[in-house]
Structures are given as structure tokens and as C-alpha cells.
Image (cartoon, rainbow over all chains, first blue to last red; front, side):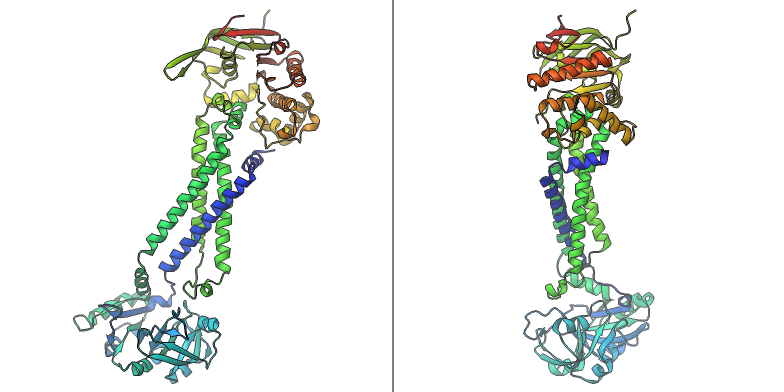
Length: 381
Length: 226
């Protein structure tokens, strides 16, 4: 026998309790990892290098307020702007869905080409999309999810706009951070809505990330004190603006995570205290045999840490395996897209569990250190 | 020429506080114990015999007086030094055996050796020797719950012996045993004192058990009366 064997035998002396402790820590850890992943999913929009070049200009009053189409001529002359397209959210429901999870945007296909830096046309051709006013370009994930093909029709019932769309799929794109959207001709929307003079937002590409801030400043300045002042911001800032509409999700998730961690600590502290309290007599015998306080502390710490680490391994590993292999996009109808359990999140989950293992060892270790041998020997079995 | 005593106690007092009341467990006790003696401490409950045993063994502290064991004043040692000293010099035998239930007999005996620098093979050899000495060479792989009370106490004696201590302290070692097992245990302790020159100090209520010792000390109200 050696000391690790002794610690292991002690940790497993009550197998049911050890198993339940490991499971409690594991489930709490998995919940914590899931919450942190959810928080990341909701608050950190996907980033790409191309996204740092893109700027979105919306009406300064509100996103719901349209902008005059005539601003196009001013925008395209701003130094540093290499491409600009109208970019209007349609917000329709596909087929008979009541809430469609992929967005549809009206764009100018010719101008829009210069904005899709990282996108690749997977099927069909961009030219076919450009030429046919009644056609659309669809993200490959949406195509796969609904089993669509080139030439199929996509019908949308308008919710923002009092019009419906009937589009023919001309091209399928992929390779972007979000391969779900549908793009169609702004001219079609103009005709159907009878309002050719407005756009929802402007989608702009700057020449380089370095000039993006200057372009934003120039855009804001160009329409200052006009009837339609704009608020230009990077694509990322624009997406974060959407997130803020969800309320303080970060705080909410942090509060729930805090509750999980608190419960986790109660479970482990209670279990360790129970496990040590019923062994006071044995610990007193070990002291009598010559074991030092620090050695007894190391036993308790190793036992507590070991159970917590095993729980963390199960919880973090389980959460990673579950969320990596489960098609959450399908299960949540596209609400959750990536739900990526990053190494950082896994490290957080494991670190919290390990810390709990250490914290849980402190009260019983302190009690044991203070206990005299004679007191311990008088403890009833 | 008389050899120096292995245990020399002078003016030893122990005072407890129980709330507002002061309880004198030991009052100015002075005794000498020679190497190889089997000293039996007797007396009624509360007479201070267990307290005296615990102070000699270094698991309790005296309020005043000195306790020299092999010339070392135990009262002057720090907690850490005392722990090392106990490991090297004292073997404990308790009334309720106090074996670790999740360990086998051999592993229980090996426990004090984990604190030494001995290698695994040497530890095993010593464990086998100690178990053989108490007649349990074939029960090393049994857990305490698979053994009788007498066998468990013999394992406890093997654990007390395995580090080859100079002093063996036994606190009512036969209190939980039947007559046959008690005789076995007392015979082993007697043999250790007689044949191996171990100094054994035993607390007991049982006059028959006292018959195995070389000397009996009677305590009453914290003082040695006979």
C-alpha cells in the first residue's frame, strides 16, 4: 500500500455517496458549461476577418425608420468606401411557419457582390441571381435544412411588409459565418411595396480595417443635420446592438451560473464534511500513529479534489460531447447556431469544480487540525 | 547498578476546565518505569489512569511537571516533533481496536511505516514479521469486518509493534474481548515485555489482566496510592 492507494480507498469507502457526489459535481459542471456557452452564443456574435471591413448604416432615430434611397450617391463617394448596397430586412415567414428563424434581406445584387468577401457560391451561379429579378440566393444551411434545390420556389408571407414573396432559388452560398440567410432583389421589394424611395439600412464595405473608423465618421458626418441622419457602425457593433435588445442576458446568465456554483459548493462541502466527520476517530488514530496535520490535510484535500476533478471531467467532457455532437440548430429551429463549447469555457468549468474541491476540503481539514488525539478518540463511531 | 528509567515522571499534574469547574485529573504524580517493565495502571473511572497513559504517550499535554521518555522531555516537543516522536517511539493499542475498516489487516499494520523512509519490500517484510508475531500471518488480506474482536486486537498489536517502538501503551486492550481472546492478547503483551524487552504500560479495570504485568500502580483521584 502507498499513500495514494490509502486516499483512494478512503474516497471510495462509501461508494454510493462518492458516486452521488461525483454525479452532483458533474451535472452542476455540465450546467455551468452550458450556461457559459449559451451566454457566449447570445452575447458574442460570430466574427470573421471580412466582418471587420463591413459597416452598417441605419437611421439614427431607430432601426425601424427607413433611409432615403438617394443617400446611395453620397455614400459611394465617401473616401474609403469600396462597395455599398441597400440592405433591407424583410422578416417574412417561410411556407406556413409562424416564426422563421432565417432572415431575408433585399439587396442590390450587383452592388452586393462586392460585400460578400468570404462567401462562395456552392450551387447555381451568382450571375443567374443577378439577372433574374424574381430569384434569390440562399444559404447552404437553409437549403440543407429544408431539402431545397436550385430552381425550387421559396414563398414568404410578409410580417413587416404587407406583401408576400415568391422567389426562385438561383444560387446557393456558403463559407460565411452564418450560412442561413436569403437575399433577393431590392427592386422586387420596391415594386411590391410601391415604395421605391427607401431602404432599411446601408451595407458598406471599407477598403481596409484601418480606414473603417474614418469611413464611419464620414458617413455619420455626411448626413448630419439632414432629415435622415444615419448611425453607422461596424457589423459587429450592429449585431451587439441586437443582443442588447434581449435585455441584460449576460447578467441573467451570470446570476444563474453563480447559483449553480453556489449549489455546487454546498454539495461538495456538505459531502466532505459528512465524510470526514464520520472518520474523526480514525483521523485521531492516524494522528496518534504519527501522521502530521499537514499530512491529514493533504489526505482530505486529495480526496475532495479527486472527487471534484472526476465530477468536472464527467461534467465538462459530457457537456462538450453533448453540445458538439447534437444538432442544436435543428433542434432549436435555428435559434442556436454554433453553441460551441470553447476550450476557455471548459477550462472555466473545470477550474470552478477544482476550486470547489479545494474549498470543500478546508472546513473539515480545519476541524481535523484543531482536534486533539484524545478528543478524536472519544468520538463515537 | 540500576539503569536509567525509560520513563521518568516528576510532579506531573493535569487540570481540566469543565465550564466554571476545575477538575484535577492528575496531582503531583511521580514515577519511574524501567525498560522491559510491564506496568499496569489500575483504578476506578475518573482516577486519571488514562490521562497519565495519554501524557506518557504524547497524545495529551500535562499542566505541569515533566515527562522524560528516554531522556526526552515530551512536554517540550512541538506538535510536529511530537508526531514524529510518537511514530518512532510509541505503539498504541486501544480498547476498540481502531483499525481502518477499508484497509486489510496487512495494510493497517503498514500504516505507521508509510511515514518512514522504508521501501515497499522492506515494509512488507516488517508487516509480515509483525503479523507472524501475533499469530496472524495468514490473515493479512482480511479486512477488519472479516475478523473476530480478538483477531482485530492482535492486528492492532501488530500495528503497534511494526515500527519497533520502545514503548507500547495499551488502553484497556481487553475491554471489548471475550475471556479467551483477552488471554491471548495479554499473553502477547507479556511476551513482548518479557522476551523482547519492550516497555508496556497498560490501563485496565480487570484484576486478572493486572496479573500479567510486572508491576501495578493504583490511582485514585489523580494520585498514585499503591
